[in-house]
Image (cartoon, rainbow, N blue to C red; front, side, top):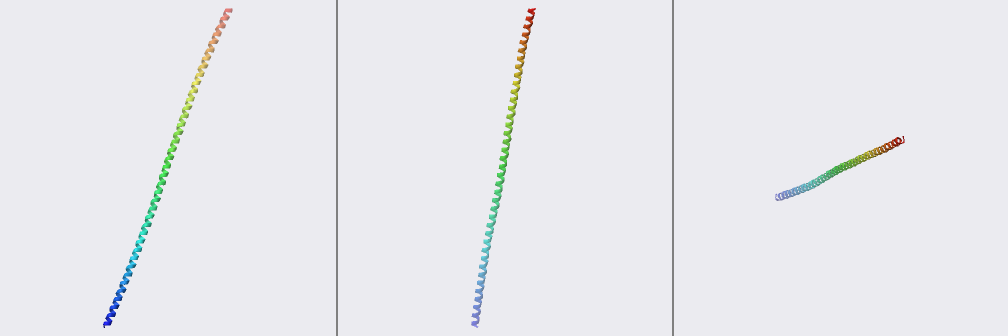
Length: 142
């Protein structure tokens, strides 16, 4: 009877030890699984963070390119406006110069006409004087 009790106690103790070892193994597996899942969550979070950073950098690059293009277009507009303004200034200066030349030519023409008229009148006076002188000589000769 005593031996049976001892054997049963031993068996029970061995079963309890096996249960404890089994529970310990299950606990270790559970902890290993949790550790693995935590590593995976950290790796996923890191990957997601890197993706978000890459996307932010991509968007920032697009924004800088857009701003550079806008600035280039603005500078092009300013250059075009300056070019047109310079063309208009040159055209205005040319028009004014042509007006001044035309006015100078008009005044020169008037001066030549005046001089021609004065010369004509002078020649007319001389011709009149010569005619009178000739008439007087003819009258004296008669």
